[in-house]
Each structure stands twice: as structure tokens, then as C-alpha cells.
Image 1 (tube, rainbow over the protein chains, first blue to last red):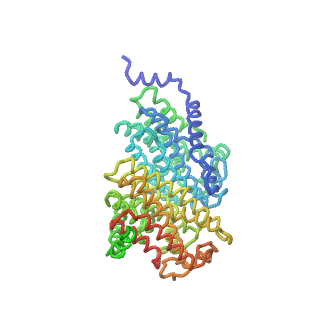
Image 2 (image 1 turned 30 degrees about the horizontal axis):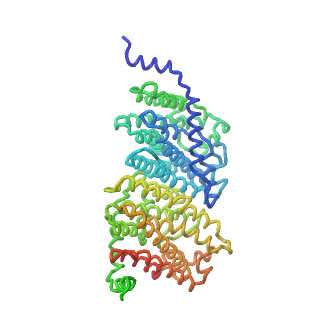
Length: 309
Length: 309
């Protein structure tokens, strides 16, 4: 007798799903939407600074995850696109502020000079503030054909993800931990679930909320997102050690220089790779009830451990 | 024959409205709500930094305006309180970031050391980010007994008010204008309608939106708010020249030191006082269709030109 598990395994192997094509197609949609989302106003300098970082490329993984789960759970690209853009505005804002001299003091990001190196520290702070505020405005004003209460749920979740219980809290603990050689795995994981994981989870979950997914579905997608979020960070730490600056588009070995605790520094490279793979397997297991329509999410999970930058 | 104008004038004079009592009563409500809005979480330092500035006193004029117009247009305190708190979170965030060394580099605010002097520049940036994100979360998650679409309208408006079209844009032009001796009245007014006026206007209008006021009513309240907003800024500039540091609770004469253009520097003190009074009169005229229930807004307008700090 053929079991359901075997059928799912068979389907997975026989799937002709082309992740590179999928990501490129979605990325182009997102790029076009981001370009449209923010035109130049007065004073020009602040709009230029916001656009410089927002339109600086990148994988656009967060918006793509939001679009993917919205479609997976019965919604449309149109319903999710304003939130997808807002997720990238928030991500961009957190990068601009993290790169500031008073924080991580980074000169390069995505292969380009950081915002404050080009526009100055004052404008970089304000560009981050502007993007953060605009993210909320954009979701509230631009989301169409979604019941207002769902939009409010997404906004509340976005706020929590950025604030002291999310990105901001994670960055504070990250700054406090810098130069401390005896950081525990628990502390490191707290930092990353807040700094990286929370926004990835909200990217996945917000798409499902907009589509009107059930609580049970949202819970499983949350778990999927938590697992790939942590795997993503472990792989980021691994790449910081192993990749060249050219591959990475930012200063390589930065964590090592700053004496930051990382998974490779705590576990070694081999164990870090193993843990990342286990998390990705667990993430994919959360999608067992879906058929081929979840191939994008499965492939994205697998991609996280195999990526080179 | 007694004209309507005369009756209104008579009513105004015979009104026993006690503004000091009203402001104190509302302020206590707002203080209690702000205290409840933000409890200490982990990591403690960021919550302490956010609370340090949010609970540092001040007139709480923005939340009080929001509560006042919500009640004036048929709503309740309960409907408006989360938005009232969010307005103060946003105002506080803008003060924390404006005070940073990369911006106005101020050491004192409301008679206390500024956030970055106490917690460091990195934490101050993050405390501002945290307050901004929390403001949106708080409105979306905590507003009760208001149709969701109205809450979305308020959120969209709050976002626009903070962003490049509001506070952020005003601050950019303010920074650009510093040290330039030939700033025009138009530029100065652009700066202030964005930096100060926009948030005051949104404070007034958001209360009316939550209560479900008509477009016509909202338009008149907008005009009222624009007028008192500009008057407020003119008086701020006057006080910077005439008040002592003790009265002001911040470094007096700061604008003069920084060679910032101000209304007194462009118009002189007497003309500045006259313009402020005319704006307050125009603001009060917008409330002509209301009876005694608009006394708080009339008295607040008058208070703006007579205040000493």
C-alpha cells in the first residue's frame, strides 16, 4: 500500500517547480510596485534618500513570502501587494538605522554605500523614520478588496514586529552583546528571533491574514516562518565567515571584527550547517497538508540553506 | 436687533469655562492612559528609554485636542484615547530624534536631560523607532467601538503626518535652512506647517474622524487646527527670545545661537504677536456654528497666544 507520505514525497520529487523563475517573476512585480509606491516630492532630498535605499535591490524575500502565502491561502497578489511593499519599507528602514555610526557603523550595504554615507547621518535617520511611517500609511490607504478588520490586524502585527517586542528589542540586545565573548545560544537566538525572525514571520502570516486564512492555518505558517527565519540567520552567520565581500555585497567578516557572537563561533561551521538543515526540514513538514500549491514555500525553505549570498 | 455675532460674543464673555481645570482634568486622564499603555518588557533598557521620554510630562496638548474634538463631534473619550496616546508617542518620537547630536544636538528637553544624553545615541534612535511603531500598533489593536474603516482612516492620516509629507519633511527643510540668513517667510511657514502644524491638525481631525463627523465639519476643524498650529509656532519663536530657560524647560535662545530663521527675526516681536493673535481669531471664527460645547477649543486657541512656556 502506498502511504500519503510516500505520495507527498513522490510529488515533491517529480515537481518541476522552477524556483529561480518564480523568484525572478515575483521580484519584478515587487520592484515595479515599490517604484510606484514612492514618487519624489518636496523636499526632494528626503524622497531621494528613501528611494536610494528602498530601490537598492536585494532579494525582496519578505514581500515575496507575503505574496506567496496570500495566494496559497486563497487570496490574490493585488490584496497583498501594499503589505508586501510595506514589509520591504520596514526592512529597509531597519537596515538604514542599523548601519548608522551610532549603531553598527557600516559603510556598505547590498554593494552600495550606506544611506548615511551618501546623505549624511541626519537625513539617514529621517529617511528611516519616513519609510517606517509610510509603511503604515501605505497599508492603511492602499489595501483594496480586503475587509478593514483584517487590514487592522496586519497593521497591529506590523507594529509589534518593528517595536520593542521585535526588531528594535532585538537590535538593543545585539548592541548590548557586542564584544561580550560569553553570549549563550539562548541570547543569540533571542536576538535573531527578534531582529530577523519576527519580520519574516510577519511577512508569511500577514499574507495569510489578508486572505482570511483559518487560525490553524496561520499557526502552521507561523511555525514554518519561525523555522526558516532562524535557518536564514544561521546561514547568514555562516556566509559572513565563508563568503567573499564581492559575493556578499557588504563588508565580509564584519561580525568577526566586531567580536559578535555568531552560530559558527558557538557551534562551529559543520554543526551550524546541520542545525540550519534540520530547521528547514521542520519548516517543510509544516506544509504537509498542502499539495503542489505550496511548492514556492517549500522551495524557498530549501533555497535558504543552499544560497551563496 | 441683536445679531448672531453679538450673541456668540456675549456667550463667549459670559461663559464660565475654566480652561485650567479642563486641561488639568484631561491631562490626568491622558497621563494615566500613557502610563498604562507601555509597561516594561525585555530588554528593559529600551522600554525604560521609551518611558523616560513618553512620561516626561509636557502639556499633552495633542492628545487633549483629539479628545476634545471627538467629544465635540459626538464621540466619547474611550473611542479617542488610544489615538490620543499614539499622538503623544509620535510627538515624543519626533522630539527624541530631533534632539540627537546629528540633528539639533540638544541636551535638555522639558527640563530634563534629553534621551540620548541619558541612554546613549543608539538607544535614543531605537526608542524613537519603537515609539513610532508602537503608536500604529496601539491605534490598530486598542481602539474599541469604532468602525474599522474609520480607524484605518486615522492610521493613514497619522502615517502621512509623520512621513516625508509631514514631520520628517519639515525637519529636513529646517536642517537645510539652518545658518542661512535669507530664509523667506514662505519657507519658514512650510517648515512649521510640516513640523508642528501637521501633527496638531491630525490631533484635531483624528478625534472628529473617530466620532464620525461630516466632511464639512472636518474641513472647518482642519482650518481651526491649521490656524492654531501656526500661531503656536509663532508664539514658540517669541518665547525662545523672551522667556528664560527656567520658564521654558529647555535651552533658551537656542534658535538665535543656531542662526535659525524665526518669525521674530523676520517680522520683529510686535508684528509676530499681532499675526499670532489674528490666526487665533480666525481659528475661533471657524467654530461659530457650535455653542458652549466648543468652549474648550476656543479657550485652547486663546491660551496659545497668552501662554508663557
